[in-house]
Image 1 (cartoon, one colour):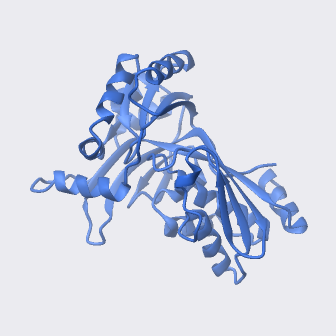
Image 2: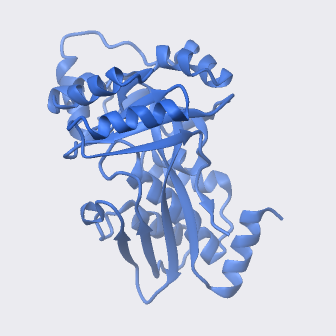
Length: 313
């Protein structure tokens, strides 16, 4: 029996709380196609899980409720629109039970930062409720529920590195041949993902937008664990839209490049900016330069890849 299976069995017997740790993500490639009739966009989305984590704990309760602590916790919705609550509701509905749990989110992933913090909480709550309730949902069922919850949620469950196609929910695991060192600069305000996609559509009006395709040099760089090759290949089609809505991010990107980052880009739909460094010492130098630049609110360093949603022992 695996460690997670043992944890699930023990939790089911004792009705104790279950805690799941789940990582943030950075998009090392985000290729975006034209808007589809359903309003979504086809993507070639290369996810890389990074070592910034939320922890989600579920405990039996009289009714479903959500609490949150940590940086920017005041920005996290605590009603049933929260993806963690929606995950509990979805799993409970499938298995004919009441979703009566207290979901507590210990938040460390930036809120509204383009690093899939909300999606991570949804994946973590799903895994935690499955363990607590002993529903024994298959991996396929969990991924199916994740896809219903949102485009980034399946990757939060899987972690590591993956190519997301469709609207990002169809995952193909990718090989990673080494450790990559990242610095993340958190902006002074948030940025709405739907607004960034609308701006992408506006900027692309009257032009032919190509079908999104994964970059072979980028996939090779990941497989080799080569930071210089990865730096040369990273891309984000949403970056012009994010910079159009939030021009101040250009100064943050410039500060990171000036400090020696191998690559600088907006993370997903932003507004967090991501900087690839050659090693841990270089990452520390970039982080310190960004902290004193006056262009961002806070700075974090992290390594990648990181494991997906994992039950804590």
